[in-house]
Length: 196
Ligand code: GLN
Image 1 (cartoon, protein in one colour):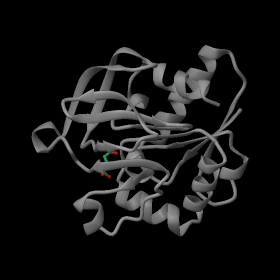
Image 2: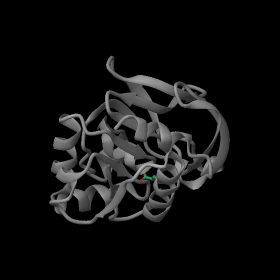
Image 3: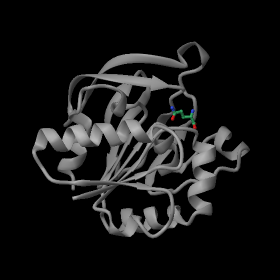
Image 4: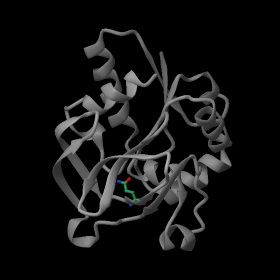
């Protein structure tokens, strides 16, 4: 099992560590590949798009030719996990913030997102949330987090905070507004590896 982590910017080391811990728990052999250039995604069995700054990430993945490869992989059924800014990149529909910065999204998930949805007072917070199919009382860390404001008919909403969807899945694509790589709890990464 070869898992590619898009390593352009953001929480790359944290995902790498969380994936390693998860592989250890499963006693499964696996390789984690840090991806900074095109040509590596097509060899991976799963792809992780970490959080960071979605404007920077979007610009660089298109420039490097990685974006097209991620899209092709997702279309052919390779599981893709996007967290926080990664969730923004997966979306088909952005908000005013996305339009203003002329961010080009991957558009592989039929969701509409809102960047920085939780406002300044909650720039960062932790909430215990129930994630359908993954587990109860997951310690979810939100950092200037986006949210999903509309899900297409093929998308399952897995967790909510108020009116916002903060975890969703469409086939092999899993999108989370929070950072599962920042807590010792590996249930999300376990679930993701189960999708491979
Ligand atoms: N607010 C950031 C963005 O839209 C995402 C923050 C994060 O990934 N922690 O790019």
